[in-house]
Image (cartoon, rainbow, N blue to C red; front, side, top):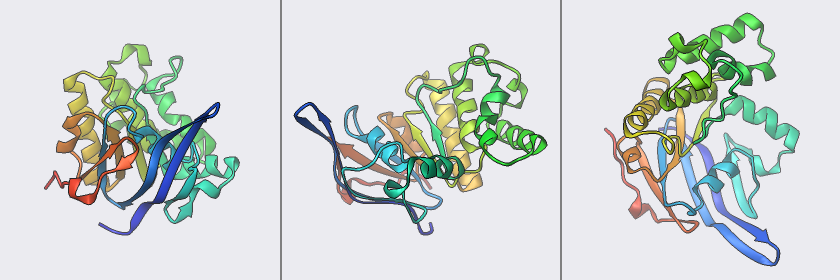
Length: 234
C-alpha cells in the first residue's frame, strides 16, 4: 500500500426536510490508500451512498474535510468538479446508467468525448477497456441486447476508460443474479490486482467480503471502529 488517495476527516452530512434534520453521516474519519480495494458494508440507509457522493463531489459535507488525491473536493466549483471528476473518478452505478440508443462501444466512449483525445485515440481507449472487461465481441450491441451482467461490465468499462485514479462502485451487484454478481466482483478484483486500481465499493452484499482487501462497516451513519475491520484476501 501507498499514500492515502481518499481522506475523510470528521465528515458529517445532514439533510434537511422542512424543519427536520436527518443525519446521514456522523463524524466519519476514513482513509483509502492507493491500490486498496475497500468494501464498505452496511444496510440500506446506513449512509454508504452518501459517502460515495461526497467523495465524488456530487454532494458536499455539512462539516468536515473530504480530500481525494490531495485535493479538497468540497471547495471546488461545479465547473472544476466536473473536469476533475472526469479525469480522476470512475463511477459504477447499481442501475448501470447506460444510454439505450447507444451501442456498448458508444456508451464506453462517452467520458472521452470531454477530453482532447483524437477520434483514433478514443477508439483505442474504448477497445482496451472493452477487452479488459471481456466484451470486445459485444461492442456493437445495444444495452437491450445484453444481459444484466454484461450491462454492468459495459458500465465498468466506461468507468475505467479514462484511466481514473479511483473507482467508486455503488451497489454494483444490486440488480444482478448470483452468478453475474460473482462475475462482476471478480472483475473488480482483477482490476485491483492487475491494474492496481484503487476501488471503494459500497454494498450490503456479503459476497463482496471475499473479493476486497479490506472491509469497513457503516451503521446509521457511523463508521464502526477499526476492530470491525477485517482483511479478507491474500
